[in-house]
Amino acid sequence: MDMFCYQCEATAKGTGCTLVGVCGKDPQVAALQDLLVYAVKDISRYAHRAGQLGARDRDVDVFMVKALFSTLTNVNFDPARFQGFMDEAAVMKDRAQKLYEKAAVQAKQTVEKLECPVRWWEGRDNLDTLTRKGREVGIDKRTAKLGTTTAGLQELIVYGLKGAAAYADHAQILGREDAQHYAAYHEMLDWLTRQPTDTGELLGRALKVGEINLKAMELLDAANTSTYGHPEPTQVRVTPVKGKCIVVSGHDLKDLEQLLRQTQGQGINVYTHGEMLPCNAYPGLKKYKHLVGNYGGAWQDQRSEFDNFPGAILMTTNCLQKPKGSYQGRIFTSGLVGWPDVTHITDGDFTPVIEAALAAPGFPEDAPAQYITVGFGRNTVMSVAGKVIDLVKQGKIRHFYLIGGCDGAKPGRNYYTEFAEQVPDDCVILTLACGKYRFNKLEFGAIDGIPRLLDVGQCNDAYSAVQIAVALAKAFGVGVNDLPLSLILSWFEQKAVAILLTLLYLGLRDIRLGPSLPAFVTPDVLQVLVDKFAIQPIGTVPADLAATLGAK
Ligand code: SF4
Ligand code: SF3
Image (cartoon, rainbow, N blue to C red; front, top):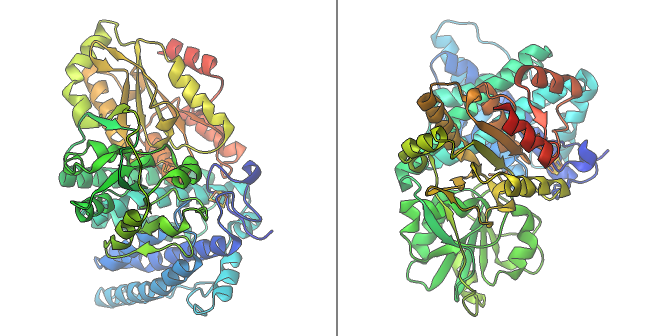
């Protein structure tokens, strides 16, 4: 076995990538990512102890979330960048350790000597040494020692933290952060270094990660809406416009805004892609008239879509796939994203992207205009809550479905298209994240002026969806689980893991999850989730529709 990774839904044979990642991650990068997570846990031991004594170092906090985010699926495939992270980690360990020791001395406490079995900070100038150490701390080694259930639950916690860290990083970039929030990650990572084995305790901790992620999404929601305003219903063009062009994918609103500023008056049209689609609905972004619409669909189609895109491409976060030679010279990465030999944009200077767009041919003519409507965040939906409630009371809206989550390449994902198509006409569909591309260009009509398909936004806007559900429950005087609402979720990477844990933390039951269940959740853990939360795998569309409509 050259590597072991089972953190995403695409994992080989549904059990683990062992030779090379289905995503394109090679054994070296897999080992470097495992070593980085190991290093972050080590650093958090000191940061947590320092924090308990009232001492913190913001740089350590920010590094911790960035490091975790960089190991998320489809973010960074560049060994050189991970070597750089390891160098930074060594600096941060030193700082966190000194911070803790100084605080302990000041508090007249005995300074704990913390042993670290694998000395990850040594031999950093040699990638082979780092890779070998990464293999020593691999998941397969822990599984052999602790068993599949314990190792899997520990990983569930780590993956949830990776997802939450992604959102915390976006929020931090826009100036929203919270010391206690960072402290919660450190505390959890410190706890993991004690190799906990009790299933009940591990599951309890996993729900606590759901709470951490709720806070991360709350911070990000505040960051996005305070910087760019509340999303508003917006018609987005989904067909090309004549002219030079840049397409922006990923999740980062600030990168898009900076690019829009820098391309003003340059005769370049900017398009969103994938999870950037909701950006078209933010007043602070849609005000740029050269943000002309959305190009393409979800991440897994990018290799053919980018191939056909006659301009420059910017990846601001996941999900990046191995670039084809045909566009390797005109794709760029920013933030934590990386691919070897792809130009990385630092310090928000997008000049290379603009130059590549100007050098490319652009679209020769306008395609026939076609639009979809987005922008149904909590503010918009709540502004029509009174009407929605009346329609429910009149029996005109029978049921709500939240059909959301990640998209992916597996054939079983047609379920979500078919489900949306077969939802009866008197039901409303809320959707979010990139899984919506399975059905967001279909016509769903409206119920007395309320559109039947409400696009709530990116995956992190699950926060908005939760707020909408809570407001509806309050208006009806019932619990969220008693609402005529069913959650039909698709997962792919670790942000979806974090969101699922948040929904479980909030006590939501009867969630249907697909297209397949996580490899790191063993049958006995799944049974606990079934018993406690009635979580279930997706079945057939007719059976799941009948069950959800009959149940409430
Ligand atoms: Fe495999 Fe997913 Fe890990 Fe990539 S991230 S190596 S596809 S399990
Ligand atoms: Fe999609 Fe990667 Fe998860 Fe933000 S872009 S949801 S998969």
